Length: 117
Image (spheres, rainbow, N blue to C red):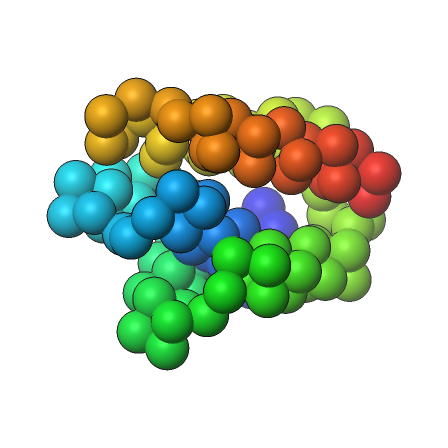
């Protein structure tokens, strides 16, 4: 279990992934709701994705916000949780036409950053 801050951060990271190669697609939106529903504070994470989409936040701003939230609560991030987040990002990326090069690069970048926390 982790804090609401982590959930908000995760939602922001998921949004940044979705926007990394274009617009949020209907298949991706459906997958996000389904996949994030399994996580603690899922409504916050899901809300973060769609709030950022509604205001058109940039990939970089959403990514930075997500990492700040996770860094603030880094003591709650076990290695298993970090790996689970990366797996979630891969599942989200696969929801619409497979994983693009930009999505793969984004996930790799997230993995490098979160390992440091």
